[in-house]
Image (cartoon, rainbow, N blue to C red; front, side, top):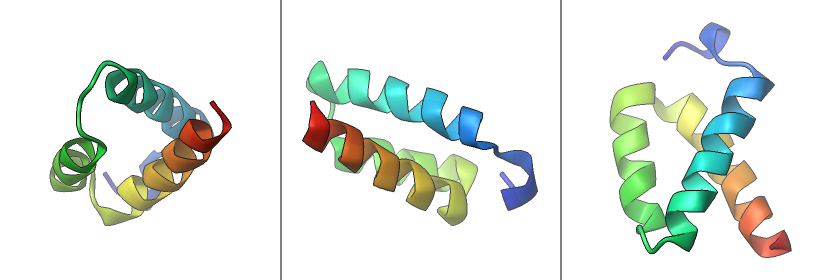
Length: 58
């Protein structure tokens, strides 16, 4: 996914899904690894930062 194609809305929606999966027991490292494969490093880095913030505030 090129940096021009993702918005803050996309990142927030994806991050919420990731947080839900982590709460259900899926490894965050596995999710990040697969996200990086399919969506690229820039998108994944932004999602990872948001997810870690969301998890710390939960």
